[in-house]
Image (cartoon, rainbow, N blue to C red; front, side, top):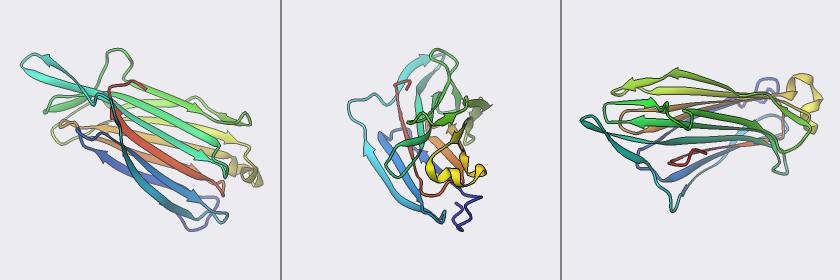
Length: 204
């Protein structure tokens, strides 16, 4: 995490693992002050209720489990309006030996970029299936990325401050563990961000 007060080069990065039986929604919050110093504000976990954590089906001689790993990443202004938001949902399977991204409907990957105000402009998200299948302790991984042009007040002080980039790598492993590596590059001071991570059997 960069926090040296350089407004032209501010980035935030984090990684979290989610065990196969974890029902919680993990939320990590950061803020950036007027000098572009990044501060970790809070890390909270909230249990989901009335949800199915995974599906199960027999396949050949073994059992295959599956669910969706969900991630949301947002950048907000001082009154909590979304300047930039990236949603990335990944459909995964595991059987104790290997894990892989599901190729049956709905699609293995879904990404959406959005903003809460008309004067910010998201670009079409990019999705990459970087490692489709992994066995043992290795991770299968998928990449979601979105860029934004922002006209939020403090972003207008410099043209290079108007670009916001959000990226997320979703991971899955043979034992059902999920992982998310999130990254954010922005130079606009006075904003704050949050990343949410959870899993269940709902596509979105």
